[in-house]
Length: 555
Image (cartoon, rainbow, N blue to C red; front, side, top):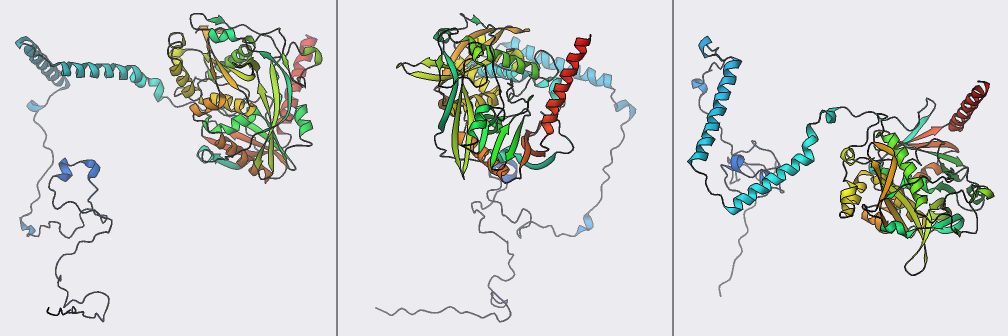
């Protein structure tokens, strides 16, 4: 076997720099095209790609160094002596070639008439038979066109081009208030505090009536009139709650109500303005509300594409909110077995006198505490509306709420009287779309209270032009956690928002602060306000009322 000899290549050292020398480089005088290691190689030549090619893959084989900088571009190097300027100015037409507007319209009419005659000629020569597939395609196109016209027919409404009316803030910002933080909703939506332990039950107060199951069988054909129930309903703030005043001495360092905490936990879904007062006293925080706050008010179609107007009419946003509050207060008491024995807790209602127990609404107040970590324990007053007997004879605690229909033609929703019995899921989906913030708050309150069931009543106006008379069209039951999952409500995100705000205020000096939702932007704005800011408003309102009463007595 002959021996294999290895011949080493000739290596010439470049003493003046880096790379091959000029006299030995075999690719000398050849053009060099810069390239990147990330460029894809797949085309050799393409003469039609820039005209007829797919636009989605235009840049796939394009160099990162740009277009037109290649060394292989065609360059015309001929002598430019033959180049000649051409006058491109537009020559005026003579008078006999000009067309007036009347002649143009006449020409257009004649052209349309010729097209019409051509179509008539085609029809008289004999129609061509269309295949069944072509007929089906045409029917589908016509059906889709009618659907689009029905859905987007109001796009040419001139009202949509009007500038959106500026909403007023929930409270007037004074000059001595100082902005200390602005938090966009996009940052709040990324927060999360998982694995929050089960709450500790501190005490339960009040009494509950039993739910009347006959209302579960109501349909649109057997609707029931909504009646007015005169009962005492209390919405006591955090700092004025006598039970919280006792609990704060021995347990917890953050205190609030379920309405306030649910607003914070679901704030990223809100559109309308609202505000929450925060008082810091040493190591304790009190999340509170003003006397005329909108926290306890209900909104209608807040998250809809076309929310109600704010013009002061019967169907304005403010009047619809008051109508919804009226419906919920009466509906939650009407569906109960009134004037029967109640389910009583060890402690009676802390906000009524002993002789007012029969006049008070059916409500239970649960004071529960959660450990948020970092030595932060929050105590929340939660509410429940009634109790019912379960399928196995157990007692289930229930939260009752009412969804109200005001005008389906204006509200961009389904007609409940025709759709509720057969398409209840579609009706509920429309409510989730139009009232996402309100339903999220209700679900959060039920989860915080530990309720076993949520009952939604569908209440509509008897006449859409009359906001004082209503009827009950149906009921629907949900488990709070399942309903929250159905509407993509993340409770861990809500706890994360609460924890961030608690840590923020704990690092601030003692005083009073205000959390306010911007009326137009998805932003939370935090103010540092004087301690007597809202107390002066209450005193002035009381003084004005006293002055009015004294003037009436003098008259």
